Length: 360
Image (cartoon, rainbow, N blue to C red; front, side, top):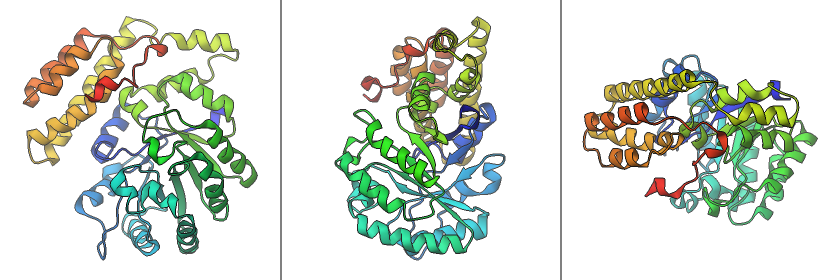
């Protein structure tokens, strides 16, 4: 099954737009599908200039990109889907049922749409019929409910009624946001449904290491894909690490021996630091071409390095200075020093990706 496993990059609003996707794919071309940050349809309007730039084929050359739409109004969804197909050539769209933002949820969008299942059922009935007639596919990215995982089986009954191309499940409820532990028991309900309905099923949630993915493969061997977000921002080479080790050993001992150390030697580790530094320089240059000034680019770089720092040994002193930097040149000084003076984590179990201190 591992030979057929696909790897998706999750959409992260404000971070994984086309600028980031294009640079990331240049240096780390292992992603099978990228999902765009959600498009929210505006009444009687199509795409904004930002949204158009994000889906333009020339901005996503060489990548498989799936646009994501967030709305609870079927006609708005279908209007944007038609634009994406007719003007930009897309043949699949993704429905966002996962965004946990309180402002989104209060409007019954994202994960909030899960609180009105009868309305969701009618939405899918209308949307799926039209999309099928137009030769378009619909995939869904969903949470398992708003407040309780017990909401999920009923939601699955609704999904089972429609020709969904793929179900991507983040097994948390909305009120969890990104805390607590993903509920694998709830995901098991989706796994059983996927086997009965021949669905493509994707797991999403807290995949930070090779071992994290290995555990999902072993528990749910028939899933078609895994989706990663924060894990790839922290460790851009994560998919490389997985693919290198997928077929490296058949026994648990062989797998553990292969996975314990990330780099074969010092030169390999130094080369990876150079690659990340080059990714950073590419992103900085690309953002400078499209954003209005250095302050906007500096904000983007700080947002990105909040994640990227976490894959280095003892990076906190450098991160604190990065946060306080007032110019790109000052910021680059600290990034350069970090990449020169601190090694990347050398063992997978050292990952510190869940540390609360990074957000303070």
